[in-house]
Length: 219
Image (spheres, rainbow, N blue to C red):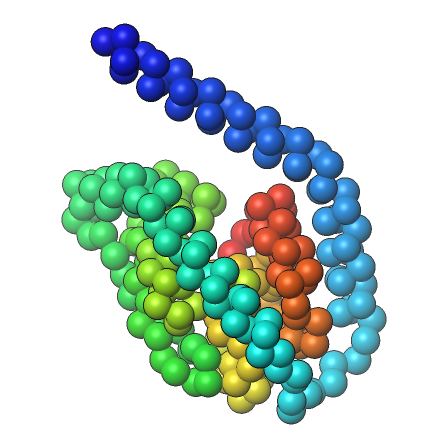
């Protein structure tokens, strides 16, 4: 009994520590993130859209990005496996369906049949999964396989902008996180993708990663 209490105390201390760290990071970084994203929005809205047929390819960046994606996918799958198991069991018991398939346009036009958790409409469970993005956790296996990247193009962009299929997907993979999904503006999807491809790099990816944690996108 004593050992169980010790383990629970350690877990509790760990959770409280992570919550404190997140709170510190949130209040310290949020103003900077807000300023930067406001600047991006202002730039995207103020310029006329120019169609680029070629974007720079930095192969050292691509190698570093793929390495990061691989390491992150393994760690996140292990970390979130209890939550994914709980999701799967809950959906199976109450709704009889666990997964659904989404066809997504991938890198260089490859069609990816990705699995996500079933999100029942008009139910508290479905709304919770949508709000917390937990329904997307199976995409981590696509991240592990290299079909996705953690930070990339909007995975549903082909439904909103024809340039996605003709140009953008030739230069980058769909991302679990992206500028359009964070800023929640499908009408400017093409401009955001264009901005990302022209400015992508480690610093931009870190900015988007922090933005996803702080802004809580509504995709």
